Amino acid sequence: MQGKQFFSKLNRKDYNNRVELILDKKEFTADIKNLILSMFYKIETAYDDYKIVKPFAEEKSVFIEEVMRILKENCKEITLINPREEKNEEAIDGRIEVYPNIESILYGLLEISDTYFYIPNSHSLIKDAFTQFLKIGFCIDHTEVIRDFDGWSWNTDLSKARYITYNLIYQNIQMLLGNQFFQIWKSDNTLLIDYIEKILLDLEEVNEELAQNIYVLICKYILALYVENPIHKEKIEAEIQQTKQKLLKMKDKSTFLKNISEQKKAFMKEIRELDKKINNKKELEQEFIKRNEKLETNKIFSLAQLIRILKKERKDILEKIQECNETIDPRNYTKKMKQLEEDVEIAENIEKNQYETLLSIQKDFLNLLKLKTEKAESKKEILEYIYILRYYSFLPITEEREIKEIAEINLEEVQKILYTKACNLKIIEIIHKNINFNTEILHEILDTKIINLEEIEVKFYIEENLLQIEVYEGEMLEGKKTMKIPEVKEEFVVKFDKKIKLFH
Image 1: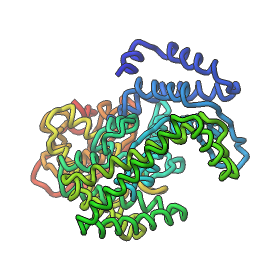
Image 2: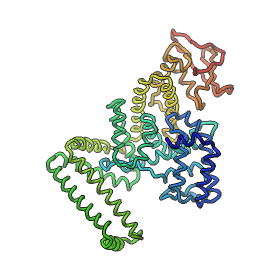
Image 3: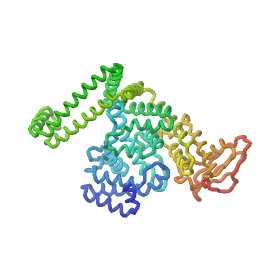
């Protein structure tokens, strides 16, 4: 909120000066500094259009402030790759190696940002896969403003869209829960909230059965993408076996709880040993020598570094103790059993027919969106959902196709609800008295990449028993549509051969 208030008082020149002050303290080349300035200029130029097309995007001021903070606090070095080289871009430990374009620069900055996305160890089976999905989804989502917008138009370039399906699912969740869900999750370092569980709980407020179904499908799909890496696959297969063993042990409740108590005692002993090493210089020096003797490479170079390592180990063990406490709590025992059963269900056949799984996610998403639109009453809500549905329809689902091109994904039911409500509330002009045909006409008109839908003007006329529709953005003709006129008793409401505004 502070960033929003701050930027509301600034113009482009002011924040440009702020960026230059940050760059003055960085040892970047002149070419890199110019690319960064161009990146901020492009964000500023394109963001207003981006926010219209994607109404659930965060505010421009918040976005720019966040990128500035990453540049200032997290970025140590940027190296440009020669465009003639075939080399992988990298972003690690505050250092970025990317091709010389502003999208790569922004993506690299986002990759090195301090994203927490905390997931408790109770989700051990999907933890690493979900973390990968969240980080990639976050980066793709935040580069969209300069990837697909240029200050004049909106162009979804499928050839440039990395990790298309990660992005699609990330947007699915945002459209249902709002962009603040991921923003809060990303910045929350308290380690108190289980956001994986929160996704399910928040969706259950819309519909419990659909929420459970889409949650399992999303986890299954993300896990399937993760195990495409053979190293990850081996690790997950071992994790699946451990999960099944845990579930088997939990069915013998008394023995299981006794073992958990023993584990907790062992973890407490480890904590005491670590505390002794951290707080006793002599023991710390002995640990330093002992560990370095075992290391052939990447040796520990100072006692300060060793203390950081030991504190990290201590933190990990404390998390395990917390998990033990939660498991021993009778209120959590049944919940833990249910979660393990759910994990086994997720792991079953994760690599089979991924595309069908992705389609099922989209069908459940649309059913949830339909339920949310049915509850929308205000003009503002309904208009926002019209923009959201239009944005969703243009999302890529494969390298060649967008959502609206997939026959199995039926947008018509949600469109009918929204367009009927919009007509009844006089947000949109009623074109035909037959609701189904009116929905079809509006679908054709709103299948457009005109940025601001409220600027659309249309002209209707009949030619050879076909309905001809001309779609204008102001005075500019953007496209022509031709439709068959069905045999319905109801009549057209609009006047023909006259340009009218579609939105009131």
